[in-house]
Image (cartoon, rainbow, N blue to C red; front, side, top):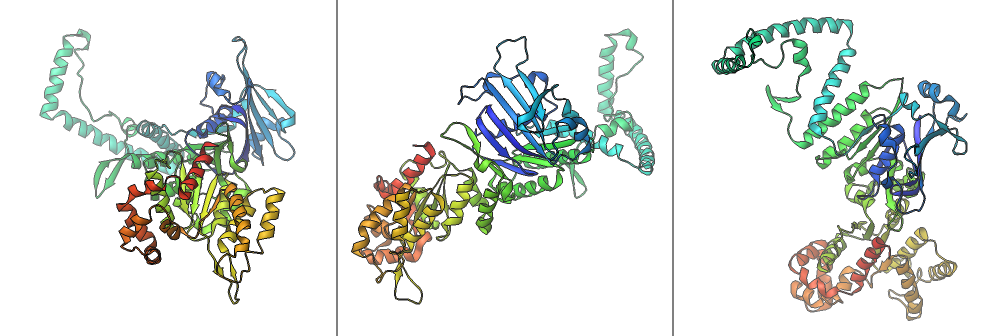
Length: 583
């Protein structure tokens, strides 16, 4: 059995969204995009801890981007074969093993009447009203929110963990424990007597009992005493605390990161122990990565996926966790026109799987950052990354504030990146060099930069008939040139092509980054820094040192980048800004 789809209409951030899930799903997206709201939608239908009062809709539950006074949350379950669930929801299960559950709420018109109802059915077309959430006896969601109190949870859950372990003992183990507890009781008696024998403890109890005798006569035959925390072994073991043993010494469990790991281990153990054939449980975890360094974030993702039984849904802001998740299990939430939230490719899908599969070895924590971006600026190498980030700072463009990532493809392999971003519905801008390469084993040359840009445009954008014709017409012309420079006859067509590519967010350099900079308004600053006034020698020097030279130059010459205000470089960053703002 699996929760396969969530359909949200007019609920909080979601105007009309369908979100597909897998057995293990990761939800990603920017802050305030609706990850917590998505979890709350699930909780309304599946969380036993929510009261009847929690189910009453509030004004804030209705989507602000629509005029509707009704909201609905629909869950589609497939492969429903569990006997416990079938027994409870048999009449609502289709022959294909599907069950739909729905919550519908209306804005309150009369406080004397319920403003919501629950429905169930074999399909979306045959949902009938049911009596509240009676199915929760067999169908349940366990939710772990991001605002969790580590210490109080650890204190409470350790008792459940001990209790469950007690219940699962064999008779032999129980008999052995009885003997050990008796020995512990004898030790406790001895320790309590020795503690009370301490001079300062005797003085404190004597003083306390003296004062108490002044308050009540009928308690004078009783003495209040100090003990080690429990008078009997059962009480003593119920008050055990978690600690760390290292080299024979007992230490406090310290640090929020370590406490978070203990927290997750307790939560996972509790759920693993309590797994039963009497119910089907879905586990939802918000931001499990709190306080953990990158290696432990990756390990925690693996641990939760492998250790927690059944369906697991995790939300995270960690690119480390995103890089470790199965490609077809990633759900990226995004906004439409800066308003309502939807899931890219409607959640877990083969489209995303194929795009990320093609992306392959390139997926790491740095590139996984792009999953969370509002726009990604794709460039060829580290020199471009260093330059454009520095240029943005110099021109007061706050890339982090706008969630813009400048990402290198480490060469000219843009297509896998573009296809991945399209699958996740992340806007992008490309800047690539205007390379001219010799065709191997021939005397011809090709405009490799233009060819590359055309391939990107054709693979990603829905072009109109005129644009398609232009690309089809010019593509063979640039593939077989007789010299290593652009013939004059092609210049008008290439100018028109550049404009078309810009409309597709693809920017072609005049030549490459270093050449374009030597012909820009910071030419003199570069010449002074490198000690070369001759442009040919300056370019040779810059290209010889590439990223290292760019890094050193930018460290000492950031202010000069303000001269590039309004330049082609600036316009490429502005295009990223426009994609974020939707203008």
